[in-house]
Each structure stands twice: as structure tokens, then as C-alpha cells.
Amino acid sequence: MTSTYVVTGMNCQHCVNSITEAVGEVPGVTGVVVDLPTGRMDVTGGPQADLVRQAVQEAGFKVA
Image (cartoon, rainbow, N blue to C red; front, top):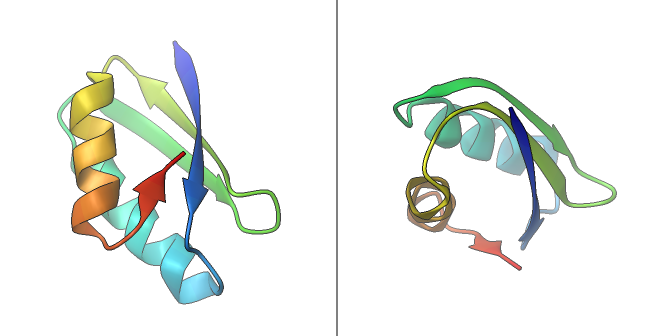
């Protein structure tokens, strides 16, 4: 299963890497693809949406 989120506040590849790492550590996540120009983040696996949002916020960004 793949869920799509929109992440705000990213402006460089370091931001993408930080989000990818943080969300990748969420239990149940098997893949994370973050697109900097669109802000789109596709998360594969069966994680709870609340845990994904929390990981993004802890990395310093927001889920729209």
C-alpha cells in the first residue's frame, strides 16, 4: 500500500534526506520517495498516518 502526503517547508536536498530518513524509521514503512519540487512524499508499507506525520514534524517540517 502507498500513501501520498504533501510536505511543506523543504527547500534543498538535505531536507529531502532528513525526511526520508525520519519517515524510513517509522515501523511498517518499507519505502519513502520525496519529490522536492512538488513537495510530494509517497510512503510504501502499512504505517499509521499519525506516525508518519509525527516523524515529518520531528524532522522540522509539516504535512499539509
